[in-house]
Image (cartoon, rainbow over all chains, first blue to last red):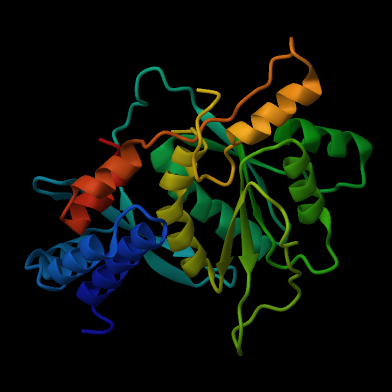
Length: 237
Length: 62
């Protein structure tokens, strides 16, 4: 079962449940009851098989709603499966569309994978993503970035591959000074698969949600699971 | 609500507000950050006993 669709779906939903527990949304009793029910679920095998068979088409779970399985990307081009909860198409009444400024290292692998992944992760919240400029040394571009951060409702930064490349850290500083809600993604990979050339984020910045990750699969789950509460706490929902 | 005390790290307690008012003078308005109210995400997590339904409702927000 370990590599089966059923095992994948079980791990994914168990990870979601654990994130609800550690963020204080549910208590330990609620967590263990749900985990126990998940393990005994009769629908797990059939839904997981439908998700893989029909990907990327959505699967309607009766009495629940729609979910679909998509394949997101690692910086080296590998893909991994990911479950998306699908929202209604039209935005909720009276809600303005939010903008998120995204800062990251500009290398092809990171750019293509991160942007592709983030579009999927932010889609349920109807948040438009804005990417940072390429060259902070040009004065007008720097001012443009400051304006983009100022006009954004929230910011996300990924420090993968940023050792001796301070642009992302400068952008984090700007967002901090402007008091923007921030998601700071910090790569902490280890072992043979570790991607070299990555710095670390100062630990004393307040008002940010720091997400440490070992791969983009790890990051995508932590970000997706943590985003609803982050938005709610910053009154962005 | 300016006297509201909470355990939130971000919330300015009444003592801090009082201190700020003293420093700013008797006529100055001192902004007070209120703790974020419990919203739909918290409500969904508390209500649902089925993890798949909790997952779907969290992202569809209904």
